[in-house]
Image 1: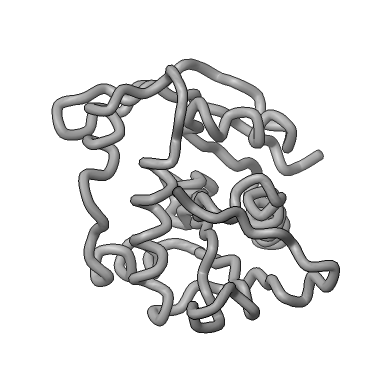
Image 2 (image 1 turned 135 degrees about the vertical axis):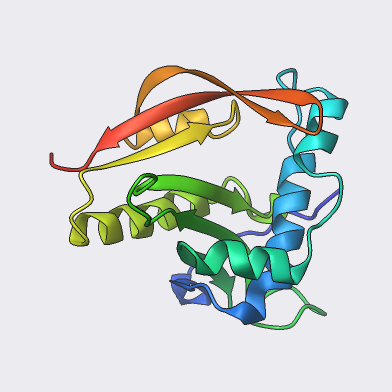
Amino acid sequence: MHTRISVSPVLDRFQVQPYSRAFANQVSMIFHLAVHGIAGKHYSDAQLHAWSNQPRSDRYWHQRLTRTQSWVMLDFNPPKPLAAPLCCGFINIETQYFHRGYIDSLYVHPAYQGLGFAALLFSTARDWAREQGFPELTVDASYYSRPLFEREGFVLEYKSYQPKSGQMLPGFHMRLPLNI
């Protein structure tokens, strides 16, 4: 069980910044905890275990995030005894030609969910993609993230299935034109 974090009246406590190697370990833990924090009827325990059976190495996450454009949400005044700055969420977008504009990851630590941080991370990424001239963004959203992407204007293209460790993870391939 994770203690819920309340947003202080001074939002300077939280900032979105470009990813750096110093946050690779925290990103790994956020991914694993966020996946296993999903409660509900859409994913079985076997599917969640296939999605993330344990935190991946710092090296894995550093390589994954440095080959894309990535940002982290930082808490500069986390609950004691945690040290600042504490990474509490992240997003990354593919920049290579074939996958350009694909949102590879968007995860927020369970203790920080429901505070609008996913939307802040997304708006940072969307604004950057517009500045770069990307014509659109795409994502394979989970059941859990689909409502966020719909609120941001994404349109469902088709139901998707991603094979992972012998399990099929259902999701939703969605698209957002950026030339609007």
